[in-house]
Length: 269
Image 1 (cartoon, helix red, strand yellow):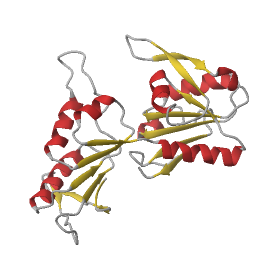
Image 2: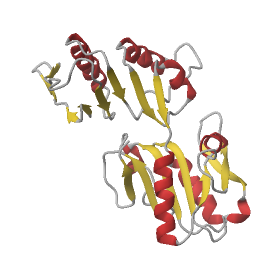
Image 3: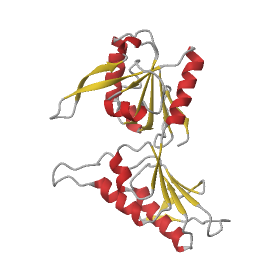
Image 4: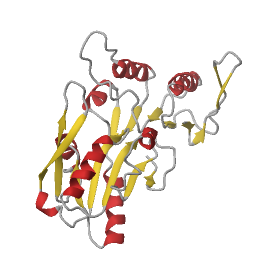
């Protein structure tokens, strides 16, 4: 979904399938900030974003900000062979060509995105995680133990959240990329009979969190909660939501636009 000054932009089509976009910048002085908000739903929106931004710039507005909480193509942040198309690099080049004053993102998946996109501002998810912690504390009477699914997540979030934590070490089949299991390191003695909050940046099918929750339950955890900044709709195609291992999943509206009884959108990104 694309919004212009907090108004949804209608994206329609001509009979041949090409885009028909009509929108106007109303009541905004030329020097004022124009905010284009993009909550990714489809690749077609990238073309619409390009056309819309070009249109805004043609009207004489130069101070245009792109608010893009979720970075499309962020997973393709490296190539291993010449057959791999470096989609993130070329996506960033297209965004850069539009000359935004600032590009605001939430909890970028990797530093490669931050390096490739010009004038980027990476907003941390600390306010959302803190809100989840407070909600758990209010309902359970104490703060949860934090759990980070891998060392990378541990380094990312432990500096934001001043709570004891453990982290996972994935056992992966490196040929297939499939996760075979997970070991736990850190303050493991605190897991037994405690509530746990797993935190990470992105979830697709939820396999990593399924392994994490199963291991935490094995170690005596009580209620297990999950916060992810970006929850893809594909989570509903995986086993995690109906596994019975997770009490509640929290996320933002950066990309998630579906419904499930245990998934709660904790705030607008």
